[in-house]
Image 1: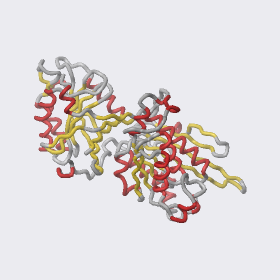
Image 2 (image 1 turned 180 degrees about the vertical axis):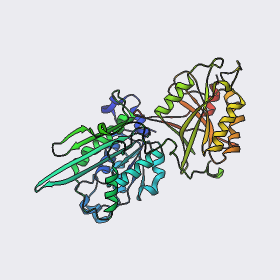
Image 3 (image 1 turned 90 degrees about the vertical axis):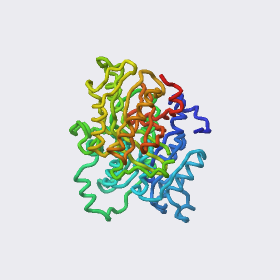
Length: 276
Length: 176
């Protein structure tokens, strides 16, 4: 693939970085405040194949953070994946963008063949399910999310995280990010989650951390080896630090996923006429 | 159809380390990788699941080739595919960097034993892979008569690498 454009300002990523990024396939699940930022940055960085999955159309309340969206999109109820596609191809028309305006479970063909899956989802269970799918197809999974909590009258706490897990490393449950009690509580209040506060600057910070993790994965600019990354954003102090929570978790082989739980359990070879 | 072979970096490292061990008479080692699969439109994903080294005693002493498996090695590999829903890929390694190629002997031998795996597990792809120190080349059988080149290899780790597989037309040209 050719990647027309001047990437000289990021040439420190290596002599093959332009080609590597142009050939990379990244799937973004959730094109709201976080995912739209990520789509934009991947396009700037020159990632050549981007899959976008989100069932929703834009609403007026999304305009405070959804990158690329316009007032006309709100009136037209444009699909979020189409807004992101327009944003990406407006920056770099040569980028191959595949979109699925559906739940990600109905678009798993876009996940299987990606190199990296990014989840920008609400809810703990959805995160667990998406990470399960990523591990089934042996993919790195990157999760971003934020929360704003009222801790006292006139006092709010903004916090967020960017976590990258690898298929043979600790999962979100091993790290202590997903806990049984959270999953159970969420299941019990299903359908009554209320309004989830979101702001553009925190989404942008977390998205930048995710894009940095992807570029470092594909085109490392310094030597390092780890088996996961969990960065915590303190949105009040505006600081980012590695989470200490995994330090307090038992370590060892992941007990939640096994090496055998990969691939499509219902796989059957396609018929010869479909394999030409 | 695009064929993608995906394994973790740790898995590939372990396979390379095993294949680099010396043998008392064979000059190379061989093994099998069992795979699970998934498909997408016009794509087939092969996911490395487990490595099965060929036991020391299952090599034949044949100085004309780097390594010659005995019938017991094949029987053990067939048994894995019989008992588990996996495809089986023969694997060996060439000790250099850059894209490796199958030798004429490799291609001939593969044509003999790979189709046998369809007798025990017909609905899974089977094949053969040759590794170098940093690249790989592979062929996949979708049925006993239909062979395709592996288009792309993904090595998934903290450093994620992906690269094109060498086309078998080229691999014949680089016969060693």
